[in-house]
Length: 241
Image (cartoon, rainbow, N blue to C red; front, top):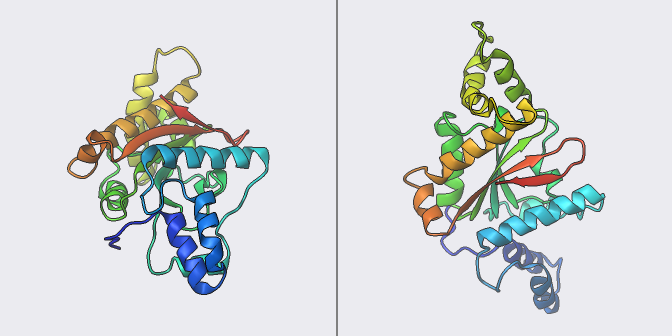
């Protein structure tokens, strides 16, 4: 959906709360001052968006989630339009839920999930979804999020030198991850961890140079593409690179 006059998601939510009677007009300034990431009326920038994600993960790890904007009325307020502040390209793994591990609510993040969080070779459905968020929703940040113990990467490691093939489209998916495994061979450390990291790095670099939508915005500093790794045991998200 087009958003010709973009405001930050928090500003939009605050205005909707006023209109619905959930917040009194006298409270608007204090709420916006407390929660708005940037100046009033200004869209959030890539650095602010990243800080918010990492702050949310800190709350999650500490067991102190704010669990914002998840009530039925929050969904109703955003029914007409969305104002996400980040695109997260994550694995489809059932243990990786960006909305939970970043402690965000409805409308905060635009999530694209695919096994192995693959970008390179993933086709129009993945890249087109990301480009839509940037071109139509003016999202300033893209995060490629890998995670520990990724099964898709494990499969790529297992089958990289084998002559066999996996059933159905699983084989095609694993083939997309094999370059990350190949580039990780000979690198000191755990081969699985190295391949997972390299897979994220490949995705980040591909998106940074993706024409015609992403590359110009990255060059102008309007969009930032970052990589991160999620530890399933600790819940911690750490940046890559």
